[in-house]
Image 1 (tube, helix red, strand yellow):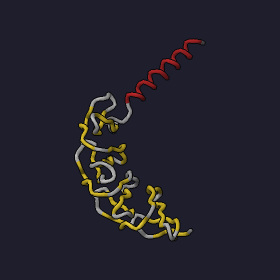
Image 2 (spheres, one colour):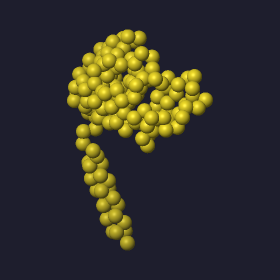
Image 3 (cartoon, rainbow, N blue to C red):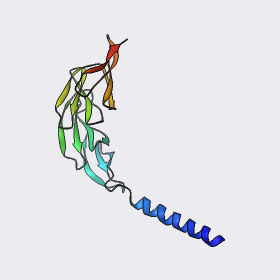
Image 4 (cartoon, rainbow, N blue to C red):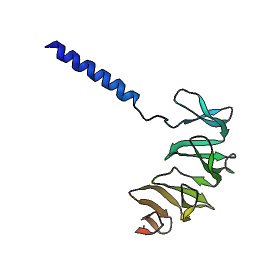
Length: 160
């Protein structure tokens, strides 16, 4: 009777180690500082993107927010997993991508760009959240909170 239990346990352990090995290859690197600059290290602790940024965020949808220049003059852009700048550092602020869109700051207001860096929703908001289910919560201080679509259409009107 103990043999089937041992076989089941052995199978579970073997399956568990196989499942562990089948994790998605190419986990995104993580930001890490060295000598006053940020770069990105892989899961083994090796730099795969050399430190060159003043600020660095986690990867989201294959892109990471990076900042160049010391606060308050920092400009924000995005790099890909190879460290190539794909959207130049030109924004006053930048958030992670969600559903192919990211909130960015321009001239004291927030709007949204797509993954190519194209401004899709002009800057007009005082607060802008991530997209979820095709909508993002936004706020204009004097008008209130509401929700917009990816085209910027107000699908739930702003309310105090």
